[in-house]
Amino acid sequence: MEKRKIAYSAIQPSGTFTIGNYFGALKNWVKLQDDFDCLFCIANLHAITVPQVAAELRKRTYESYALLLATGINPEESLVYVQSEVPAHSELCWLLNCTTYMGELSRMTQYKDKSQRQGKNIRVGLFDYPVLMAADILLYQANIVPVGEDQKQHVELCRDIAERFNNTYGNTFTLPEPYFGLAGKKINSLQTPTKKMSKSDDNVNSYVSLLDNKDTIIRKFKRAVTDSDNRIIYDRENKPGISNLIEIYSCVTDKDNDQIEKEFEGVGYGDFKLAVGESVANHLEDLQIRYKEFLADKSYLDKMMKQGAETAQSVAYRTLSKARRRLGIIEIKK
Ligand code: TRP
Image 1: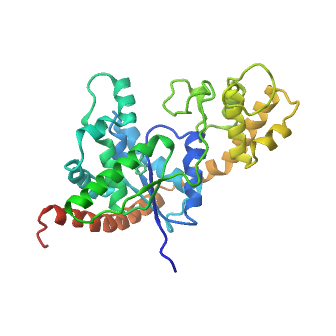
Image 2 (image 1 turned 90 degrees about the vertical axis):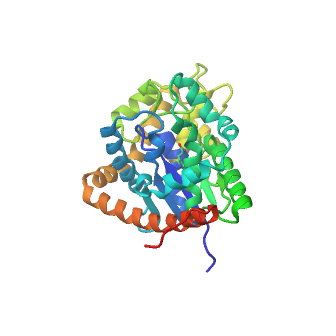
Image 3 (image 1 turned 180 degrees about the vertical axis):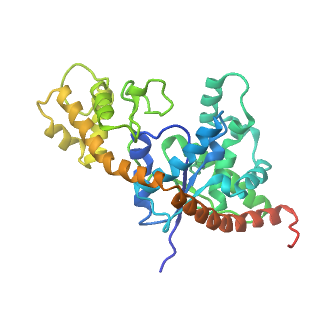
């Protein structure tokens, strides 16, 4: 049998996940398992590049893990693990720091945005974040990295770092590619529909959390910002609010925009919003039940996390050891 390609992706356990994360990424990760050998990582070391409350980070690490399983990622089939459980990530990050240029990191648009918003006392970790991300990917010799558009630049940098390392020290890393094959839809804010839906938005009405209850979901959709011409037509430019709702409805129902326009011909905005809200709430119901079951079973989560970490450690160590040797870092035999 032909060897399957390796897919690697990660999420940060920060904040609640929204339907944007779900339709844009998580839902597609489940499907990737059919075609690739998959690794999914809870990137808790990435999360601390901005200040976190310890108890919350701890809690969210479990919640994120439970959520991945609840979406349908199978931890017996894919490798699902917590980043900090594999120390090779931090170490390879250091080795790669010594191959990466300040200029390259300064050009990262996410860093520019985030540091600008933070103002003073920007952490070195925030600047270095893309190198840690490169270490994540390269440790597992990943071929493809399913990510949203906002992470494309980081994957390209990873490729540049890997290529430079290979050229300087000898072939060590597989060059990865960003992957949008199953490109998830980009879901925008319900309040500012020209902006990406974000869990860190101050206005809770702008996003739908995966764990919102039915009433909350419907209420948020009812309050969604739309235009006033009262026709349900997809037009991102002139009708961003309605187009976003069509997009969301299409994620849930797998119908295309034309079908949706027909379905709601002559229907008013109020009824349309209600229909979208109900479809989302129903769609999330099963996921929420499974999520709560997983979360209640901490010993199962611990067991899966441990199993994932052990497998990840052994794969990661092989690459780390190779990189060390290439650089002339000695390894004293045990
Ligand atoms: N930076 C990614 C994000 O915020 C998360 C991430 C960390 C990641 N390491 C990764 C994604 C490796 C893909 C591969 O979305």
